[in-house]
Amino acid sequence: MKIAALQLSAFKGENEIKSYLQVALEQKAKIILFGEYLLSPFFKKFENTKKSLLIHSIQSSNEQLIKISNSYALTIVTPIFEVVGNKIYKSIAIINKGKILFYRAQRLMPYEHWNEAKFFANTIPKNIKIPPVFSMGGLKFSILFGYELHFDEFWLQFKTHQVDCVLLPSASTFDSSLRWRSIIKMRAFLNNCYILRANRIGQHQDEITQTLWNFYGDSLLVNPNGEVIDCLGDREELLIVSLDKKYLKQMKECWQFR
Image (cartoon, rainbow, N blue to C red; front, side, top):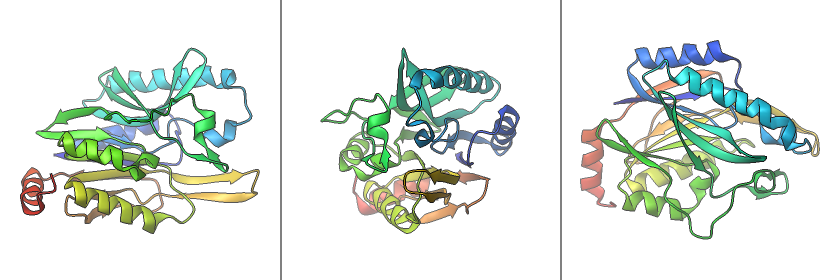
């Protein structure tokens, strides 16, 4: 079974997204994963803006993506700004043929320089719930935001529910690629599962610190033995990879971690 990860800096238009969806379809991918803050703007640009001014553009962008999905036999998994009333939630949307399922982040960055917890309306539960699990091609998939990768509770849930592949959109920066690779490889190995990461590219000029943040890409697939199978560089690219059910079974039987 083939799946894809789209590595972009920002949403550039309907035609560009359609062209990548078409390529993924032609390569027989069944799922395409987008990185964080690709369809939605990087939240720090709007920290001091009234959220009411953003809501209309967010809703328009979401409706456009749902409309596009009707034309492709693909499951689109993408981080998105979910609007309910006058509140904005950080969510992942699973979209298939116009039907959409939202997962709201349960852990948000609370740091002074990157305070998603303050910006978004998400509630932070004491006890996390398993993100949506869905089956395709004889494999079980689930989703997780990049920051949530660090919390053991999610991975215990994935192990309990026998998740075979975790789809991980991220927006990593600050020269952290080696650390992220190490954590992703560790998680994949200990859960004997595949992890597909879609990281964004591009830059953000931070006004407070007067520093330039570089989103470095390095979207990748890690196998159930904790090995990087394929990866992208730091440019606009589409990664298409294959998941091997036979190899997955061999690793589960070999290590017996789940």
